[in-house]
Image 1: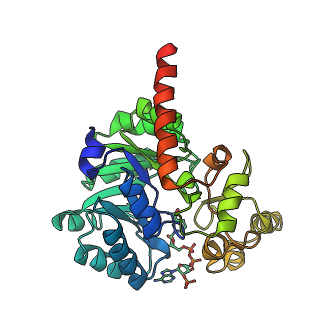
Image 2: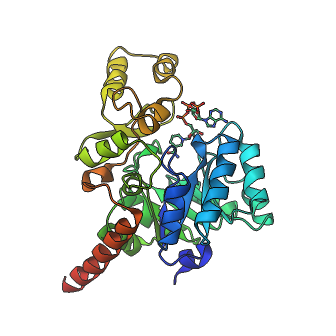
Length: 312
Ligand code: NDP
């Protein structure tokens, strides 16, 4: 047991990223039932939908699960009310200041983990009293930090300056990478893309197929003027490249992005026009598996990596 497994009351320090359009109750409860921590991706859920997924999750697992809460979500107060009413034990907050809600949640006996992409925000999170920090590197899919700091550099730097338990994220899809993250100072890992390519993920089958086809160099961090996002280089991505070539203003980029691109790509399966938010680790993923098989694979790779490390 380490501080993360103790804090989250899980068997393995493996957390499934609360990815929008991917992380519904089936994925979340399967991850929790297999000994990790599942997180509902509330960013793409209207309040009634979130409540429905929490209720279904409670029926499907007796293990702890949590909610990922992007802090600039338009109906955030509604989401918070539901989380408290339904006594969800853990929230992972992201994309906003940890000062606003941390102590409020903690007063309601809810553990708070905040997601950061830099040392500066890790220090702010510690000051705000969070229970743990997720440090997410440049390799991660979806919304990301602007500075392009890789997980390999981010984790040891935060570890050096911060004493709250640290969870590494960004680029992790194998057991050997879990071990590497631990060696660098993380006590847990958050994994996104590997869990998006599972049978239980709520995303569209065509999106899952794209993840397993994706090779090294097929994803890119873009749209830094709006919110930096890593996605697969599809037609929409190349439309963005063309817009940059024409020196598009921020307003023109906003217009090009429009509304609901992520839903179009990941939930409705429009692989040309939608946003396909996936991390660099997709190059390591070549099969859609059940959550149970992902855990089996991660654990056997982890054990193998330990014996390889000894032989070195
Ligand atoms: P858009 O503005 O393009 O579209 C909003 C989408 O969210 C729509 O598809 C809409 O569904 C859905 N939605 C759910 N609840 C609401 C609500 N209360 N009001 C309006 N729309 C709602 O945003 P994105 O799709 O890019 O992002 C949606 C959310 O996901 C944001 O909160 C964002 O922070 C988060 N996000 C997080 C990421 C991460 O990496 N953590 C990555 C990307 C987004 P419908 O079409 O059915 O109306």
